[in-house]
Length: 135
Image 1 (cartoon, rainbow, N blue to C red):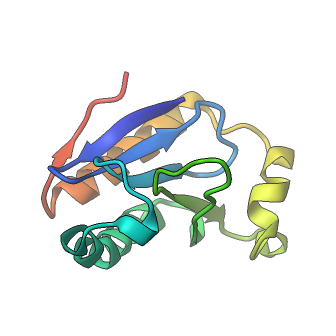
Image 2: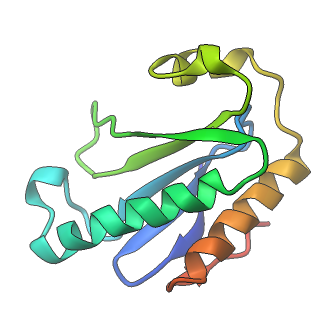
């Protein structure tokens, strides 16, 4: 399940799932249906700066040591980037271990997850686009 946290005319950032065990898991994707190979030049020019904005917004959360940016496209022709917040102090979750071992962490309380999503959306909206209220 995804919930839009932020969007502009061409991109959206979604919350992924409701049972995260990480400080944040979000997905950046174009609003149009593209894969990386056919992303229009205008959208491609926006992608780098937007990934940087999203990474900064996630990294600004309390207790986040690093943001892992991944593109997994197995079975999906729609471009999307996953941004996973690695908790501070858990060096064993570096690299590819984060998505594999995330399920071993305790669940993030719902209120903390929602607050993290609100802060991410507001940080992105401060530089353009619209923050969306997540129920």
